[in-house]
Length: 253
Image (cartoon, rainbow, N blue to C red; front, side, top):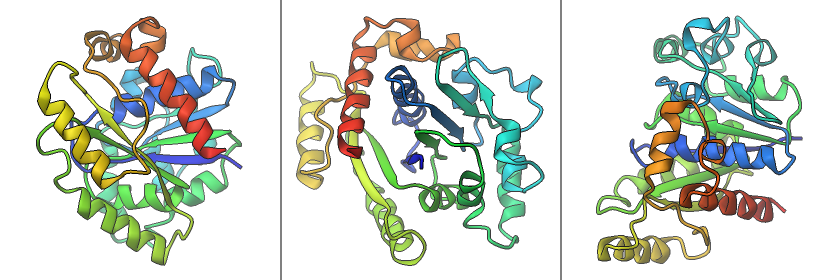
């Protein structure tokens, strides 16, 4: 049985896709067969792994509309043990169609349950509280919450946690928060320190021991279609995500 982790925050620009890609990459490096499901209509995880969207024969839009099976669209990346179910902006239109469909909340869960076996499945959810996000929460065992170390970091999180509570009550009783991951931490500013203290106060038992620093190499890697570990494995960003992946393995047990 795969351990399914939804990387979720309805706020954009918090390092959600970067975290999904690099967590998946390091889990794969650690010998775990890992699938990233790009479930964000922006398709950034797809391009961030160097996949040419114009060449795709199937995407998550087809899976959600049940015209293709998950196994039919999965692409093996150039990184050992790492696979991706790609997306393009078509997924946004699909969501509109999905709103009227039967079983609209469980399309992703059904696709995963009937799909190939992996050790880990990482879902890169959209930066919104949408039907796709709820599909991700219902399909997942855990939520990983990236939170940017900046002034508005905790705004809107209450709404997401409320949605998680509703999903747990009605559709997915085992859903759990695996951890809150502070991203874009700048150790030179007192603001980062204050925000970290605030996040720790709200999630004392859930905050990751390792945080993700602001790092130029980390920001450059997606434009080369590479995870940070393949782009510059000695960078601060690479070392941070490697540590987070180890922590995830510990938390999953």
